[in-house]
Length: 144
Image (tube, rainbow, N blue to C red; front, side, top):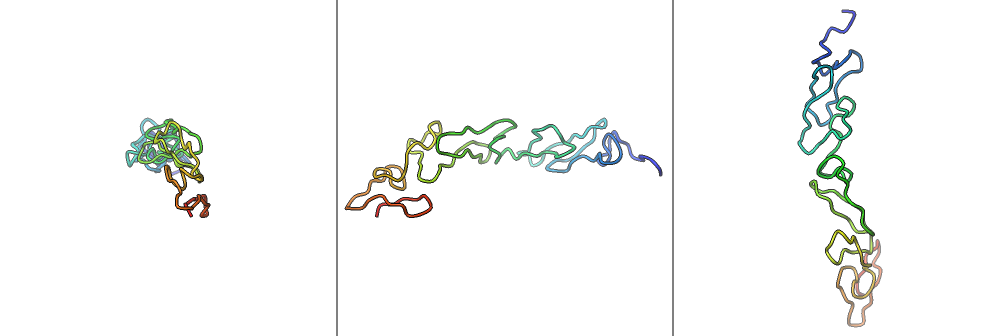
C-alpha cells in the first residue's frame, strides 16, 4: 500500500521500476522481461530502429520512411533534381517540377528538363504544327 506493489520484472506498467516506467504501446505488443521493455512490433512493417521500446516502441514505418526503407538504416539515395521516397518498403524518387526521368534509370535521377521542345511536359514530346512549349502553371508544360 505504500510502495511498488507490482512485479517490476514482468509488468509492462512498471517495467524496471515504479513511477514512469511503463513500456510504450506505439505499434508494439509490449512485454517486460527482466525489468526491460521488450515485445513484438506490429504490423510487421514497423520497427524499433532506436532500440527504445520504453519511450517510443516501434517508431518507424519501414514501408514509407525514406531513411529506413525496408529496414532500419536503409536510406533511399538522393539523385539529381528529385526527392527520395519510400513506397511499400522500396526506394523511388519524385522528380522536381519541370524535370523528368527520361532514361528510366533511378541511378541518373531526373536528368532532363521538361520545358523544351523535344521534352515538353513529358519525355520525348515534340511540339509541332506551329506550337511551342509553354508554361501552363505549377511547373507543368505543354505544346500550345
